[in-house]
Image (cartoon, rainbow, N blue to C red; front, side, top):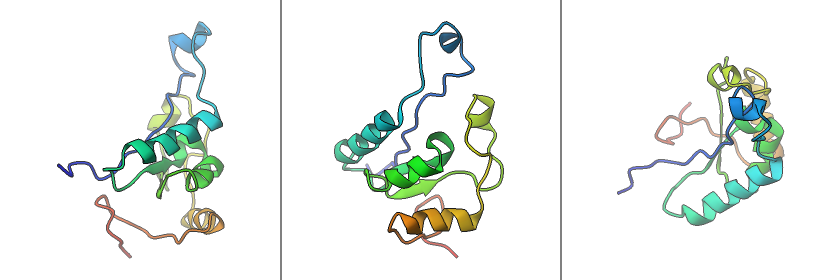
Length: 121
């Protein structure tokens, strides 16, 4: 149907949950997150884009994810609140310059896009 523009896999943030309090769950490891990213690219071959959401993974792991199937790096630039209310420990925001640097260090060309993955600016 081409109804999906992309897929954004991110790990459950358990730190503010009863399950974590009871010691019944833990956050996914970096390796597990990269495996999900790679599997997403292979299995969801009908999705044009797989996104590494740096708010969930952290910026360094999102950068690595660009070599594990992700073709898009996404996350709030100004001030993210939802993941942090759930217990995320990543920074609240990033500068545009830092995002550009991280993408270039990964050997990719940064392109600002809109919701439809069309280049803007």
